[in-house]
Amino acid sequence: MASLSAEFLRSRSLSLYRQLRELCLLLQGDQQASALVQLRLAFESNKALSGQDAIVKAQREAEQKVQYLRMITPRHMWRHAKEREPPKEVRSFVLREGELVSGEADVVGNRSKRNEDWRDPDALRRHESLLRRQYFGQTPPRKTERFF
Image (tube, rainbow, N blue to C red; front, top):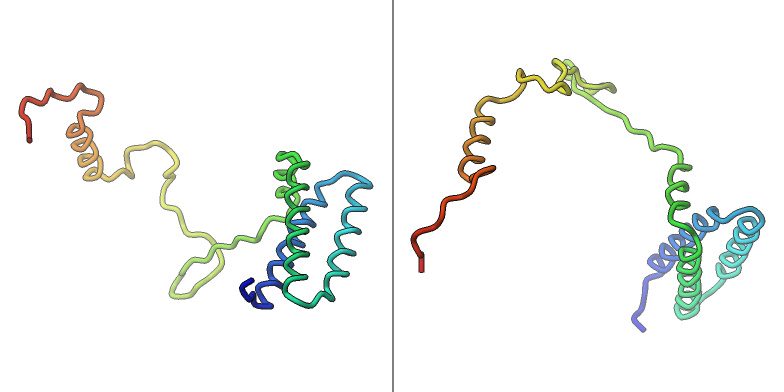
């Protein structure tokens, strides 16, 4: 077996723990509580493992549990789990008078309306010519020459 770094094994174990914890949180009632206790105890007992083979074997067992929990958990529950997470903070910054400040950019006019004012006439002209060139909405002419 190829030698795996200790950092890789550690990060893989943490990733598996997070996946299992999320899937355990989707279980209902007593089943959820017992699954979380089992998960914590299993990972705490495996914390003292030394040797790459033993760690990889424990990770394989955890991967099998992840696959099993994914099979028994309905997909609509996964969607609700994501809604349960607190929304991540999103902030906007703009440059005003040479300084970066928190806020939003000033909007000139209402571009959500379908008015003709903000459309670029050159872009419209080019778009229309490309539509004509591709015979959009028309029957293309029949080819009369052969090129080979």
